[in-house]
Image (cartoon, rainbow, N blue to C red; front, side, top):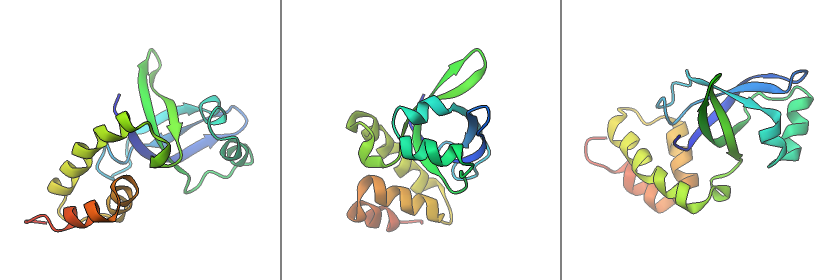
Length: 133
């Protein structure tokens, strides 16, 4: 599945699982919820895992890949920053993010922030000045 970015919407610290929203795939509407298990977090981010186990999950965002399983779509891998994402996967985001810039009437702050993190200020400034935006 394509790389996505989302915010944790629910987390059950007793059972060690939760749901992350899909922001890029749903163009910022944050409606789709994807299952994740704490083991996927622990293998990359022990500090974040501890925070989640203490019940602190509000405003926690990360990049992730998913796979479809018999139980539905699940997070398979996470990254806390765009710099942590392997470049081969990060490069696949370029056309998706640029397409979002072309198809959104009012640029949401999340798109501006993601573009800045992924591509830097110069590319973000170029996208902000696309005719018709």
